[in-house]
Image (cartoon, rainbow, N blue to C red; front, side, top):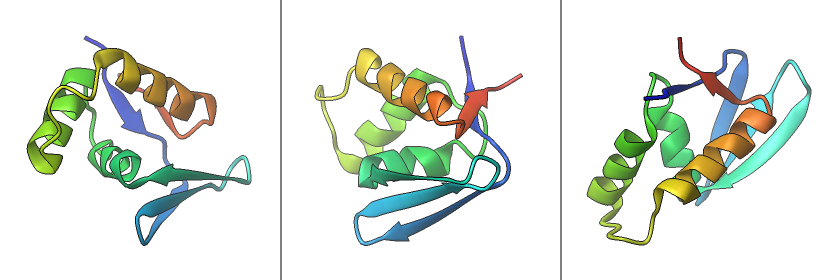
Length: 88
């Protein structure tokens, strides 16, 4: 199963319920919501989509609202922004 991990050289800060991630190599800024920020914090070490979903369901008491496809799209966007990559 694919694992994802944060890329190096990223700076992130939480402002209220949003996170701002600075890609210092590409000089870009990306804002994500609180749940996205929680995923970001988990991606410090390699994670699979099911493990991210399980963590969100456990820590945020999210039931069936979050699907595999939703998480896959979110992670694909982060890959597109150069913020995360597939773990080796």
